[in-house]
Amino acid sequence: MHIDHIGIAVDNLEEAIDTYSKILNCAPFKREVVEDQKVETVFFKTGESKVELLGATSKDSVIAKFVKKKGPGIHHIAFEVDDLESEMKRLQSEGFRLLSDKPLLGADHKKIVFLHPKGTEGVLIELCQSMDQ
Ligand code: CMX
Image (cartoon, helix red, strand yellow):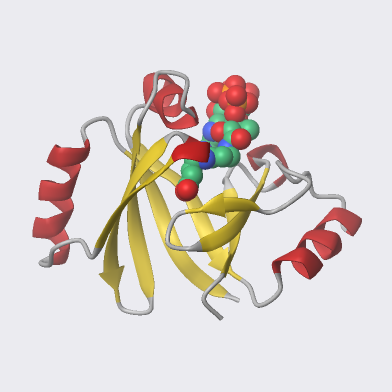
């Protein structure tokens, strides 16, 4: 397991791209709308891991709700796992609350599942597995 990416919720995607291009001194390598999640994602490579900027594509997106409530900021940490379904079973048996029964389709050609932040010391955790393997 390793940190795949840190998700940052933003209000203005273009401004955030400009800011993070300067901080990381590189251009994003991928931009993708994830319809199911109502988000537009922009990825920067940072060594083995990535930074994912998340903009809402609709007013009822969880990102719009988050930014309205807390302002822009770190939204989630994503850990890449080798076998998502078995990790889901393991964490369910440990009593964690998964936010979906089945893996969802995420950005970057990954299947994903989230753990509710109420059971994870206030941090929204995403588990992801590449579908390219
Ligand atoms: N990190 C930490 N806490 C969070 C949070 C986050 N990202 N989002 C919400 N919360 C907290 C809120 O602060 C609130 O806490 P309090 O009760 O103490 O005020 C509580 O969770 C409930 O928040 P809410 O605003 O009422 O939001 P909802 O319950 O409607 O939704 C959540 C929260 C986590 C269940 C929802 O955001 C979710 O299902 N997330 C998973 C999907 C997702 O985040 N998709 C976007 C990313 C997609 C991608 O990366 O591809």
